[in-house]
Length: 105
Image (cartoon, rainbow, N blue to C red; front, side, top):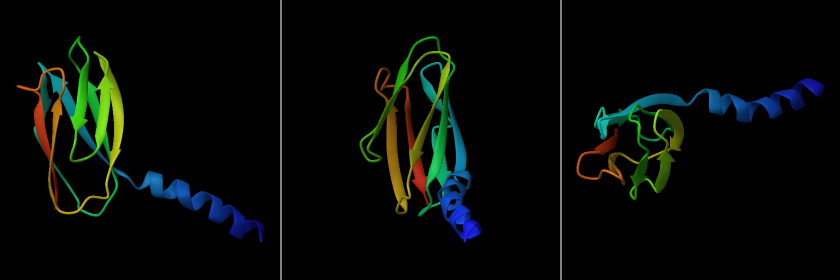
């Protein structure tokens, strides 16, 4: 009985460990890479590193996510599971240069 209870408690943790990690870098007010391809139907983790000295905001209306990332710091954003398609994002503080797209396929 104890083993079943322990297994039931650990199952939610195993789903977090299975998340795939995708990295984005903000450098010179641009997202690199500007295009990230992820599997449709799976929850993924975006690890965003802001290498600029100034803050930037990851903003995506299609992903329903906003996150300010301080200069010289990192942030994690979970997205998905997503249907196949294109999901745009931008840096709200530098929208002319900081643009990108998540492609779920």
